[in-house]
View 1 (tube, rainbow, N blue to C red):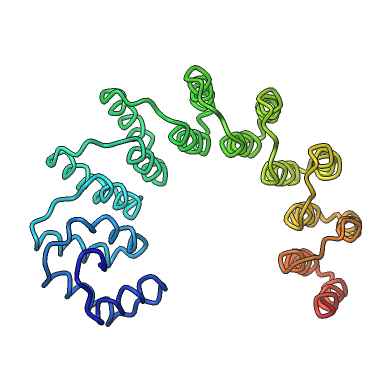
View 2: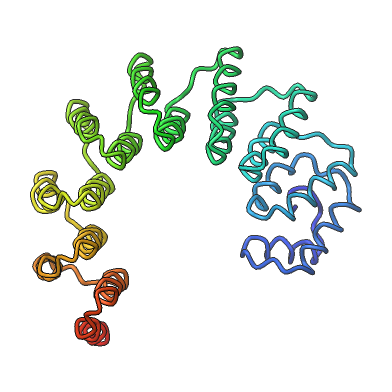
Length: 313
């Protein structure tokens, strides 16, 4: 707004409120009235959509103001709007039709946002049509698009397709990072496909990509949910040490929850002692996990003991 208009005090106040995320209904109305009755704001429209992208009612207002001024969308605006209306297939299709009419050429960033939107609806047929459209335009998936596709197809249990994407990334010599490998670990681990998960871990070693804290947290969580407690503790106490990464409270909390769901109370006490040994203070999630576990088991003395420890902290 400040770039588009010569700002009055009212406009400046609205912009300040916008930046501080405390935009009231009255200041919103004032801002939109200023836009509607003012000159064209085409040069700043994508910025405005970016500011308001989490508020669909504001975005709807902006689209009406654009129509009032007879202005067209640009690629960046379409990308932001696709993110805003993710999961709303009617609105997404309307936007795509408008892009086609205005001959707006989509780029990889737009397609990535579009694929994420379709993934939220579990609409694999639409995902495949989008991939065909990319081929027709001569656009190959980049690392970010592959990450999105792996997430979509992995959650849908389409593991053969996930492997195809892995092979495509290798063929394109794309530089994999720890985030996309963590995503693969999570997908295979949650599906109890431990052989494939271990292959990803081995591949990380071959690429000399250092596991992150998130890598180890995912492994502890996966093994814990599967009641593979020896493997979970091996990750926490051995593999993290080899990687020279210090565990944090979230990893102990994950192990605590897993032991709690299996009613292994002695093991829970041991995990709490290990936290002290690593000089890690229990946090609110730790205490909530303990109270939840003991409460469901009717171990109210233990609940009171945990509450007493919370008060001491």
